[in-house]
Image 1 (spheres, one colour):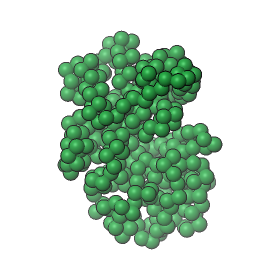
Image 2: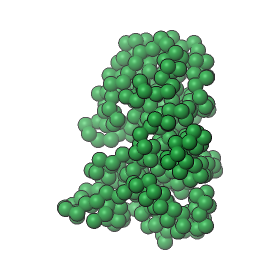
Image 3: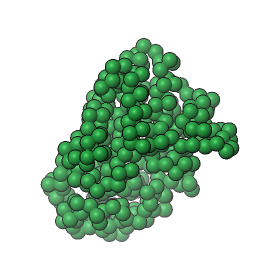
Length: 352
C-alpha cells in the first residue's frame, strides 16, 4: 500500500510540500496560462522544467517524450496541473521511471486538478493510448502524494465541461457504491460524493457560486477516493467506445449509460444489492430507487445532456459497441452483463 495521501485546500502548502526537491517537472495542459492559480504554482515550483506537449487523450509517444524530459533535466518531483489528462501523463511518467528503477516510488507526485470530475488527483491509475487502443495502468505509487484543491479554478471552466465533469463525478459516486469491490471506507466516500453533488450542483452550474464550487470539488475528490478503492463498473465500461464513436466527452458518455444500466439491474438484483440501491437513492434525496433514477434523468435533462442518436446502420453499430466492452471492467458490476445484455442496453442508450 502507498502512504496516506495528503489532501489540502488552496495552494498555501505547495512550497512546503516541494521543500528539498532539486527540480520539478511541471505537467500542465493548455488551460494553465489562463488559470487563477498560475502565478502561485510557478512561484512554488521554481526551478522547473515544463511539459505540455500532449493531447487530451495522451498517447504512448507523448509519455515517452515527457519521461525523457524528466530525466534529461534532472527532475525529482512532478506537479500535474489540469484535468485528468495532465494527471494521467504525470502518473505515466512516474510509472516509466519506476519501471527503470523501483526506488523511483520515492519521486514526489503532486496533483492540482482544474476540474471537478474525475477525482484523478486521488487515484492510483492512469490511461493512455497505444496504437489507437486505450490502455489502463495502475500502481500504488502513482497515486499523488499530495492533492491541492483550489475551487477558484472552476470559475472560468467552460459550461459544457463543467456539466460533463460533474456527471462523471456523480456516476463515480454511484458506481463505486454498488461495485462488488466496495468497502465500508469506499462507501463513505461514495455517499459524500453523491450528497455533495446532488445538494450543490444547481448553484454550481447555473449560478457559478463559489461555495457550491467548493462543495462540488470536494465531492468529486470523494468520488475519486471511492473508485481508487472500489473501481468503476458497467457505466464506465460501456462509455468508452460510445464516447469514441459519437465524439462525446467522457462524463457525458458515462452519464447517458448509467440510468439505463441501473434500471436493467433493478429486477435482477438480490436483496443485498436492492438495499444498496436504496441507500444510494437516500443519499440522492429520493424516497425510493425509481425516484432516484427519475431524478438522475431529470438532472441530465436540466443540464441539456442528450443521448446520442443513430438510425443508419444501427444494427452494425450496436454489434460493434457491444463487442467493444472490456470484460474485466464488467466483472466489477454487481449484475452480470454478457454481450447480448450490452447490446440490449446500447439499443436503449443510443436513441433512434
